[in-house]
Amino acid sequence: MPPRFANKVAIVTGAGNGIGVCIATRLAAEGAAVVLADKEEDAAKRVCADIVANGGKAAACGVDIRVPDMVDNMIAFTRERFGPAHIMMNNAGSGGQKHFLETPLETLHEMLQTNVVGTFLCAQAAARAMVTLGGGAIVNFSSHSGFLGSSGRAAYAASKAGIIGMTRVMAVDLAQHNIRVNTVAPGTVATERIKRSHNDERRDAWLRAIPMARYGEPHEMAAAALFLASDDASYITGQTLAVDGGFTIAGLRVKNLAAKDGSY
Ligand SMILES: NC(=O)c1ccc[n+]([C@@H]2O[C@H](COP(=O)([O-])OP(=O)(O)OC[C@H]3O[C@@H](n4cnc5c(N)ncnc54)[C@H](O)[C@@H]3O)[C@@H](O)[C@H]2O)c1
Image (cartoon, rainbow, N blue to C red):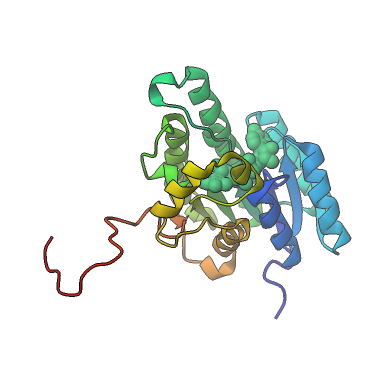
């Protein structure tokens, strides 16, 4: 059987760090030609060099997804290097937490700009190219915060819930062009950034709240994103797939329920 993404061209935003590194690396390992797009261009170049050294097809491109001209350049760069993209992975995002009463308006603007406007611009520019190709797949990145009210995430939650809503509309509007649009909603993921920023108290709170009692791994987010981008998901569109060890589906959790305890 040929590799899953043989002859496919993919763009991965935020490919210089964290989850994006795994997405880009695995897409290349499974046959895709990959453009690694990041505002940290040097980081994208380092990951790109690793992929090429391992026999993959890849190119790095500096982009700030908030800027329409830069997004258009990313699409043009991809077309020139490998041809139009069949797959758009909208993984770049920005986060942060502050109590609602202390959240500056600038923080809300920044999260909406990167997470909502950036995802909108990349998806729209990629979709316009996919229309000429006769189809494609777009995978956006939301978060558990798109569903739940975790402390200090008013700005982030607004932006990540926005991505879930936007995904549904994109899926409806683009279905006639054979373009599927889905979203991955990660739980907490053991990227370098998260490992650096979680203290013991925060880590314990997470481990208690996640039924599977562990953080997710970046490669587990990549696996879900690649599934949604692949032909295995050919009849799936407009969905948001939580990849979170059960965090967002859990209700009351009692460890040692007595076998005959029938009370509510
Ligand atoms: N790590 C987690 O626990 C977690 C949880 C829920 C959701 N997510 C989401 O998953 C995605 C990836 O997260 P991560 O943890 O790998 O993030 P990360 O911070 O490790 O990496 C994000 C990458 O995106 C790039 N980026 C940020 N803003 C950009 C912009 N305006 N233009 C271009 N590139 C930009 C950064 O330079 C960086 O390389 C994000 O959308 C994030 O919100 C992550």
